[in-house]
Length: 273
Image (cartoon, rainbow, N blue to C red; front, side, top):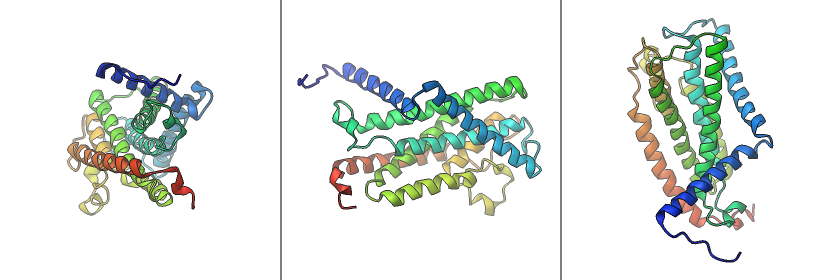
């Protein structure tokens, strides 16, 4: 029991890492609810409530059909799904086990495995919620017509990836200033309710209002998704390359910051607080 664990080659090390990520992902999914099925159903119910609330908001303010020619429910879902996946990815990466967590005392566990597992758990929940809602809507409400499904799936993954990258940046700063970073991350997620552009069509925005949205990578992801989902809509004020480049830049900064912080952090940081 006291023998040091060693891997014979890179292939064995890769299999060990994949197995650890899988078990940690399952652990994250089961952590919030003792019943796995009930936990997944709560995720689906949360997404369903979000879609219903925005559908009601649009109905109350007098928008009863899609600003883009096509399914109104598809217009709502292309915004809600991207918004929820992006914010859930930020929260998942930010709340992953850190270097002083008790789990890190068990080799070969490390923070990279914890972060990856937490992000994959959030992605799994959102994929399940989106698939269930799309199937239920297509079956019981109205047939859904999505022009290009596979590019929409790719942009869904981009929304998740960009959220993970932003979460890495917040995570690197968290040990240095926990309360301020928690407030900033919550403020950014709340700001996405408006700045993500899920309630507007980018092509109809005047230049003054466009400047309030186009800094946000999620705004570009949502607008490009609608360009692939609707045959009659071609985005002119957004691009796919912008969220990719921004996400990669934030990922590099976040990884360097997390590496530096991991080497400096200790249990005694909070002793005097």
